[in-house]
Length: 146
Image (cartoon, rainbow, N blue to C red; front, side, top):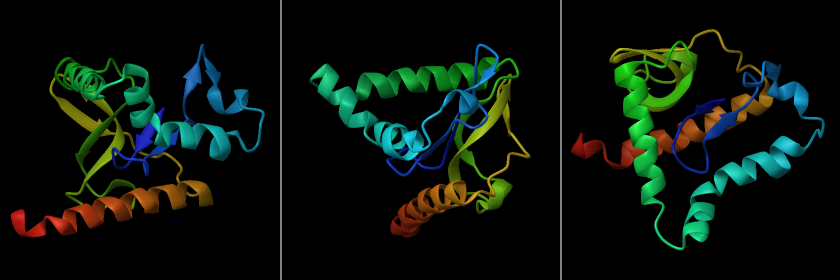
């Protein structure tokens, strides 16, 4: 699964390249509106769902994610795609230097953004544009601190 963009409700959780037991996840989904009616709202509300389930802060979930992030970055992801917020190198039209969630492959302390994924469909374009606009707005709000 690729998670594009900001760590916020605007992120784009893209399952089009995901597999489960060697099968395409996209091919398993038979309901045409499942992505927009079920999956995307569930992803957007995940933070609130964690808080509701735990009855307190989602900090433990964030800490767990940070541990996995560092493990993959420092030890490598064994050729598997993981999502990381990294400075853009201009890939996929994201402005260079903007920290953005990309699918990456990690190898012993370095990473490379996965290239060649098709984001030309209208849905992907809209989702990427929304999360990019949010990140650019956030960067603009703190520009004087950079």
